[in-house]
Length: 345
Image 1 (cartoon, helix red, strand yellow):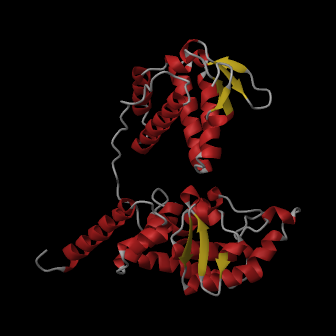
Image 2 (tube, one colour; image 1 turned 30 degrees about the vertical axis):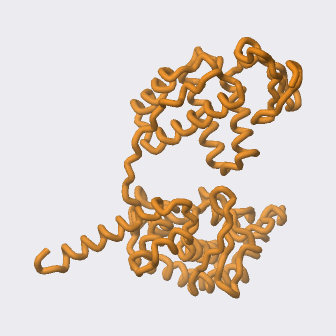
Image 3 (cartoon, helix red, strand yellow; image 1 turned 45 degrees about the vertical axis):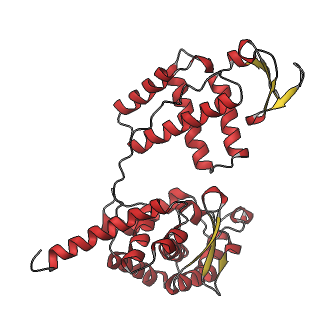
């Protein structure tokens, strides 16, 4: 390759090869309105934008992960100011960034994600020739304490869902939707993003299954129970048509299974509000959220004797270790029951 021949690198940029790429190698953006810069003067925000594009388009990380990593890198750029050149960031600057985040009370999970964002970003920047060495190689993620998830009792969830089903008999479109949505959410144990992304075509009422597109664009088919089937049939017959009719743009609902109050596809925040209203009195609003219902479904499956591998497949966990946390919840519940019931406890 000649010194003027371009070669592709990540994020829609092209690096023009040169004998010494770290003393002024030109970069040319192939985006509209792009400009030539030099590897030695690459700005942090420019590189971060290219990396976000890379992980979204090429690595196909979830939109939520891309947004989180992009926000982390924006925070890094602010923290290291007045440094603006990518190659001027060293390990000490990265450690200082995480230390400041620790002092302001960022959660351990947030610190771990920020560490992952920085390491991924600088690994890409090094591979792409933007920096001569990776300053994040010895950046250690804070140890994540794995707290046990909050779980509602099976009786508590049953009471909530039965109450919603009774109210849905009046035919209110929102209540019909909420009943079907929570029955599906709990019955299938899916993620809130997966729930919001469901289309009509994903539903198989005959087999009582739903096709889910999970993390990493991995597809799985998940069963749901008879109560969810009945609630879905009622919602599709009377609830969804009424919700779609409320909007001035009926096409906005598209093929979405669950619609918001104005007829468009429901969003995670709306699901959160529904779960809090339904389960808040049972679990407390501080502990409840969409993930609490998923935690509860997983724990109740294990309490009922479900195989751990089957639960892993149902939940769409890539690692069995992620699923195993629910065995600890079940063990704690068993120990609590033992202490209450056994005469020699």
